[in-house]
Amino acid sequence: MGEAYSYDAAGPYDILFVKADLNGNATSITTFEQPSNNLKVFPNPTSDILSVNLLPIGESEYTIIDANGREILKGKTQSNQIGVSLLPAGYYQLLWKNDGNIYHARFVKE
Figure (spheres, rainbow, N blue to C red):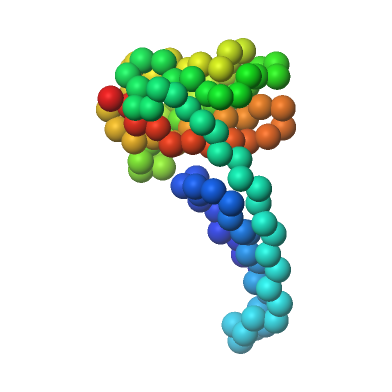
């Protein structure tokens, strides 16, 4: 049984499970559709503060991942903003966890 996962998922996607016999022949395939959890961020591109379109319900956790898949910044916030002025210019992925849900968005740091 296997699973594919990517931080780079950009919309609705399926998780695919394939069961195989010892010869590598597929014996069953099961898919699960994931809902879209896209997050809108602004301004994009940004140079200082990145805002999200969700108001937090309590504390939110965030992770910023660079174009190479490395975690660059991680933290918690009570607001809908993150300071990104210390990040080098480039393309990033934001993972935002709030109220048991995980959202994602891409943004550009100038």
